Length: 470
Ligand SMILES: Cc1ncc(COP(=O)(O)O)c(C=O)c1O
Image 1 (cartoon, rainbow, N blue to C red):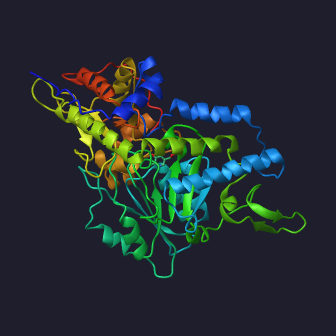
Image 2 (spheres, rainbow, N blue to C red; image 1 turned 90 degrees about the vertical axis):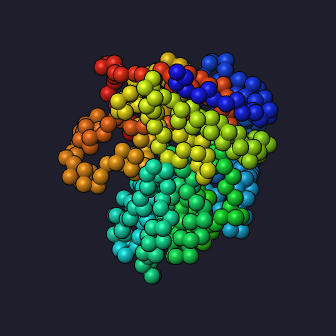
Image 3 (tube, rainbow, N blue to C red; image 1 turned 180 degrees about the vertical axis):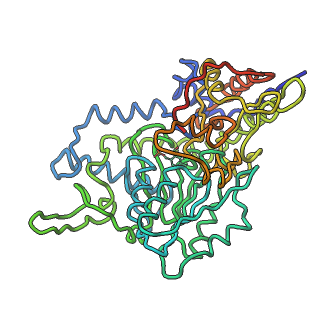
């Protein structure tokens, strides 16, 4: 009996096939199947060459000064800022681009400076990265109330009929912040961008976490107008790491109240009088020296993506994710029972190229994700296991009730394995495969062959390592 459908060979995009051979040759040279693009994108070789040539040939100083090498750097930093806005079609009259160390850094700027007060609200979806969940601690410290909007299994979308109930729960003269991901880093679900207008009309400032969306989707800020957008550049174009951005509407940015000042963020500060004056614009939010030598690589990377074409990249990953979903949904044990279960949408409508799943034993129980990692390593496949810093999606997928969590005995010094046991989880989480610009049909075929290792698998070895990260 055939246990798995061969991935259908969809016509590969010739340009992307060529780029895989040239720009991403290192993947095949080392035999890697890279399926962790939601973790980090991959850079094209030419991006590095262009960036390194610039650093080889030019002399750059710290941009906080006016000497020749400093001004040369400042010019490139400001150019990178303009290019970032242009990439997202964000009008500089409406938006400001603030450079941060990563998406988390952008979220922190918003969280710590949003003027939460008692009576204010912080609304967010269950489906959120921990760097968004963490904003609730700023809200709590300032007396604002946090509310979560649940996702509904099996698709893990938000029930559109209940959303208005949450959106209308705003206090009149209060600050209200609504945060959600344009694409889930857990399930790949794409939450509707028209929530932005709906929430704003109901009195919310909207924080759109675009980190998992923008690597393979066009975010058009001339069409959508969220108050705050966060992203990490390395997830989009692989290089540079250490650079993220907060793209914020000028009026929204003006609402933020930073709790401190630092080098780079002020026009002047005194010691004998405790006075300081904020620097205008993005500088107000960029603490210390920005990652200046890496910033020209942002422009190089974005130009590269533009040359390939975001719409083309999007279509390419959609074709490949369809194949991957086919592989998983057709994987069967000899008795005909499913050998894998996918969490989230089964098709490609309103979903990105991130797939969360578990392999199943013939009795339907989940195959330990640590064993899956071990087998993946043997196949030189890089994927991810755990909850991917998105505990809310995990709580829905593994039907962990509020009562279980509220009643659970948790304490200092517990390990992740202790939590898995205390909550009664069937495993340490899901497996995640995420696709990107350099994925090709051969990666999916090798994934399919790896997947057959779990067909008819009854037990797993006992010597699996302790779990280390969620
Ligand atoms: C949706 C989403 N938001 C935020 C983040 C945090 O990104 P970073 O670790 O680069 O700050 C991630 C990282 O995976 C993510 O997927």
